[in-house]
Length: 248
Image (cartoon, rainbow, N blue to C red; front, side):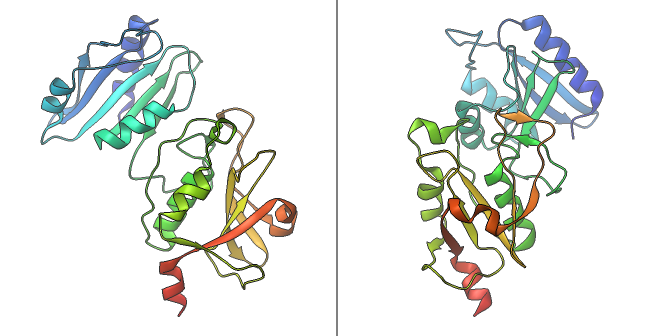
């Protein structure tokens, strides 16, 4: 957890740097967190960022570190490039959207979120796939990979659920197969591909996190719904091989 005093300093730094995106490395030291400001070397620093990779690696080496950058004009969720950078650097990312009041801080973290229920919808951080990842880690002790995705990826010709689950240990269930706890319903909602997924919890219930019309919605939380409500939109069911072995 980054203390409020450091967050306030980062907000001030981001506002002073605006309209350019601010960049920094946070280093955990004995006396607390230190902020190491980084120059934004991007050709268009108002809408993107680039930093000296060698300098960043040197600052992070052997230390607990977090990469920070700002979104001067929003949005309040990570971009595709943010998510790719997080995966590539293998350290947590802290992002600040300073276009809103109060400022919105959000974190890309490999630790996931412990709370499965009180988590507002935020694309890439607490969306339907993030819920599945955290649920599988907590309930089944299974680590599912993160994958970078842009907001409304389903409208841009991607079929992430079809492609990503295929290589993550899941297999398609035959039509009419008996369901078991942890099976995943692939759901298509006003899209050409499955763009939503939900966890079968038994007793006819699905646990899922529906997307909002925006990439961030402070009032949209995960919920349990009767599976029959989504029956017309379910394209199929998948199951992880490890869960099949546990049931055997």
